[in-house]
Image (tube, rainbow, N blue to C red):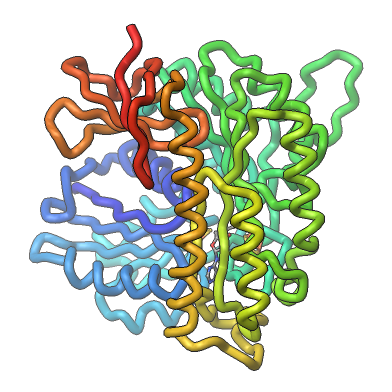
Length: 439
Ligand code: SAH
Ligand code: SF4
Ligand code: F3S
């Protein structure tokens, strides 16, 4: 029996899908080359914006074929929809992000005909991690979930409802997983979570005399940075209100930790930030970034933005544009506010029209791209260490990422995928830079 997984959404979904694939292989299923040859189609979903959900339902229609015996939908849409997901008649199994360790069992039940329309959206995060096989099928760059769920309840966001309350994995489990990945060839590790800097996981007994307690992200990073074989360490996503001075110092002291931080601001206006329940003002955010630049001069930032939050006025929107101009982000992700069922913002008066959100997004994106171009141009004439990830469109072209997650393109007759190379940057565009490998 062959399976195929379609993944939508954030990095945690990419991580989960990797672990689901390993689990299915361990349970005797085989990975299909593509959806057309799969008996079992799995859609691992995102509920963050309306568009992500629409894409899911249209893709079920497109990918389903004569060979399909089981359709399983998992992740954040499953969690949010509950039983109503079965209104889509082709779906056999719906499993939450905390219940995927039971998927092989559910697939077998559907295949044998013993059960139909299985819904499993239990929320026990700790149980899931304990039931997964080890990580042997390893790539040069891997994610490791350290923390999952969110207690922040930003008023626009579904994550606290779809991923559950905050759960931090024990530090020992994380360190062991990273060691396993490194010994199987990983070079770059990204620690992931909905809010990694609120990590507070059970401490391992590593140092004699140290009481067992909890570790914060800072301590975890210090420990992981020392592991043999690690070339580059990243973490994401950070919440501005939880970002500590100690973490900034660790960046300054730890060469293996990329001098780059994704710290989403969402809006540059205090009234909107308050209505979003973000827990900080625009100035507090800017002060943190300024302190970060003082402590670690080569640090660069990326951010997420939402335009057209309910009641956002033109002036308030322009505060966001001004903040973006001021910070000059290396990379940014910007979105039109999307109404999500059962969130407080969905019930607010003063929803902004789609056209207006569209207009604001275009204005903000112009400014964000200027920031990107500024940083890309600044690389010209410099040498960057690049980890190559994939082939480009042209023959012999390879695309990789520098330490700031900027895309770097080179030509090479040698296969560079999974390799680090120093690249001398000669040209810059909006979304990437081009250069030559330095021998
Ligand atoms: N925990 C992270 C973000 C996770 S969601 C944080 O707080 O930064 C990723 C991004 O999706 C958010 O940063 C936000 O910009 C965007 N997003 C979340 N809910 C949204 C909504 N309802 N409409 C539009 N964008 C949204
Ligand atoms: Fe959503 Fe806010 Fe939690 Fe991020 S911090 S996952 S935006 S509720
Ligand atoms: Fe989407 Fe769930 Fe991630 S809603 S962004 S897949 S946590």
